[in-house]
Image 1 (cartoon, helix red, strand yellow):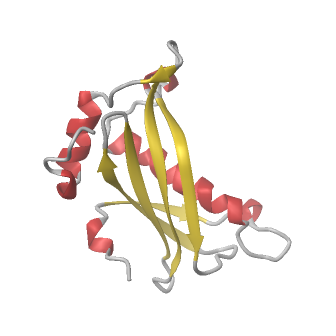
Image 2 (cartoon, helix red, strand yellow; image 1 turned 90 degrees about the vertical axis):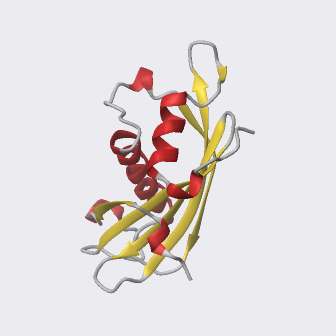
Amino acid sequence: MVDLSQFRFSHPIEVRYADIDVLQHVNNATYFTYMETARIQYFAEVLGWKGHWAELGVIIARADCEYKQPLVFGDTVKAYMRTSRLGAKSFDFAYVLVREEDGAIAASGSSVQVAYDYDQGGSIAIPEAWRDAMTTYEPGLKGEART
């Protein structure tokens, strides 16, 4: 069972008609889009990102999703997420997609982000401002190692 009390951040998402596949439920790839939508909001609200793409400096190294319940047109989803690990150059996010109408967990997933310098074409240390913002916002990260 997922403990949603560990997730301070959430973002509502309306299932759109365009999200539906021929089987009349949300297409599997769209769940990743829902996680991405939450991730971008987290960058804005928690890390203070102002929408300038050159300042984001992050790439996705890995993403996974475990599907649990179908979503259909008209559902409202609450996308919960949190930073679950901080390393020296990478950090992990955990996601839980909950159907608001009945509280059913539709999916859970994770992603690994790497701090990246696009001009130099390589990974960099997680910016201190991001590290400070995540450890302040996420109580479970206090004293997280920089490995």
